[in-house]
Image 1: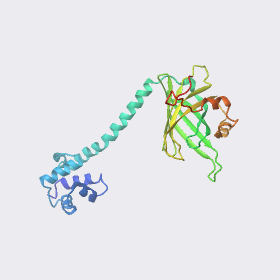
Image 2: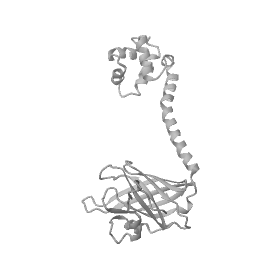
Image 3: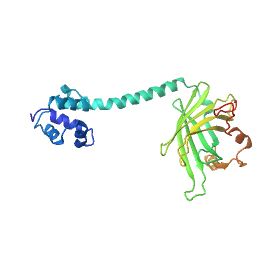
Image 4: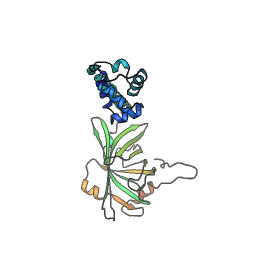
Length: 270
């Protein structure tokens, strides 16, 4: 029995778990008895063999195979779910990209305006870049929030992808440092040669003050394809909703109102 492949194959299966003791607890087999299987001193009963095979997801014939072949089969079984899940996710993304329209004329820099999710009554002006790489379009944004507290300036950076679907621009961005939040932005297309404003709705949540999901009107103001980055970043921040630094027309366009007959947050007709 010492030369049988069972002990080595059992030990190999246990290596995918935190400990042999944990395996024994989940199998409901006495640790001392299981050690005899691992050492080759004893052979599992029919009942215990069935229990072991069901737990590890192998057949009895596989468990008794020569170890090299057994290790190849088990390794493949453990890799397949990850590879399958990854390819399925990529297939969904590829489907969306194939259906996306040309976003070339939206490439450039924008100021992004919306009412803050975490600072009541305050307007955030951030900086956004839409850019193209290998025929696909991407998004980067930065928010630079001045604070009077001892921690100084709060910085939030996001990256994401941009798609043109069903006559609307969709952005899915994530916070790049903590990776703790995802924001979806839906914008109206602009039919002007140069898009002065893009307006829409975004969902999100405050990063530092609470975890309640929220939605707001969002506006992008086109700056051009080449800008003074330092000057633009210095213009970003957190502003009172009466601050003259934010143009009055922009302030009026990003107010969040739900009229009694509407029931949901909507943008004004573009």
